[in-house]
Length: 212
Image (cartoon, rainbow, N blue to C red):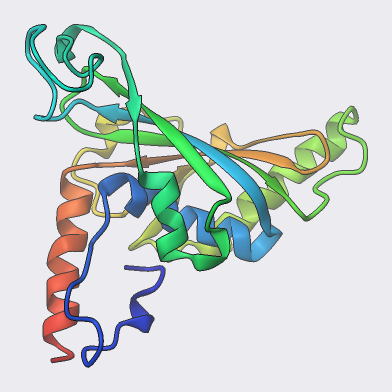
């Protein structure tokens, strides 16, 4: 929702996917960046709250890292969220990948997205004024694209617990935006991986029901 729901055709689409909480965070953000600056390639890291697929104490799991005690470790693991972007935004198929770092917080996660883009963001990356202007340009583009429901933003210096219960899919942390070189940008976006995702799931069910 907020990215490709207008393509839904009840006569054709009988099985739908709401994707993952991380894809729901990444997709509206990637769409905004791609439409403004044209993404060449991107890599994301999600620092993700631990989930019930992990173990309370070290024990058997097919993923040896997820087998480790979830509440006392930072656990690197896989995520299909970035690769799934190609299913949501076909233009980005094969252009993005990512990893997850599972951390011992109960909910609220954050995506760190780094992209190279076609648009030249600054001519001289060693010029502090140009770099500052480029960062501001990225943030202004995100502000224009943010609808508040799916893609939101904050200019406050907040932490993960401040976003517990936030219904948006993706809340961009504007103070963390950065630009390096002439065409590489970094954006950080928060999401309540439980509540935000549940909101989208309920809304998707209603969206489909209204069109049957």
